[in-house]
Length: 190
Image (cartoon, rainbow, N blue to C red; front, side, top):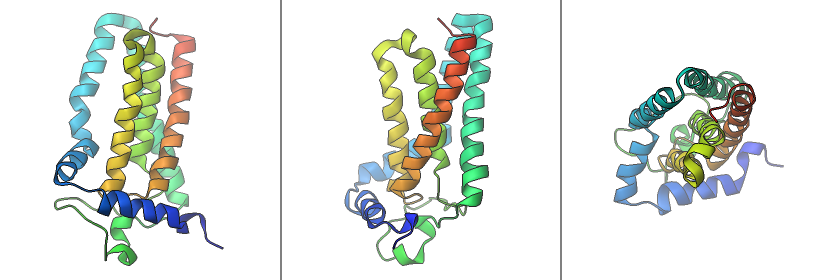
């Protein structure tokens, strides 16, 4: 009997994403997407847009928005990763024969399960979707594509297995749903 982390589909899908479905363009783009600094202008725009247009309520939105990644990161990094130890693909000697490690990539040493990138970005995607969808309309769905692309990048560069990002995404979606629901019921932008 295999443990949760010894599922062949997880390693097979990692192998396809990291090793077989690779290209020089993705080797450039995906590390860029997973870099937190890449998204600073996006977050700054959202903060200024909401504060400028919604004044006092905007400050409450900002507080709820800030609580979302704090909570997702706490649950993923401080609770789950501390109790569920899984070696990251990039640190697993058993995968060294085929796993691609891109030059310049820092190799995290923490547990692989769950992906905090996935939790944080899907948490923010859900929060932003639920609080801004009446303002931006169908464009709000792109937030989930944004979060999914970052999750894909995590697997592509070899720092997470697909299961890590799937479970991290679920953590994020749940917490983002909770923070957005609390905000929308108590304040709401519209």
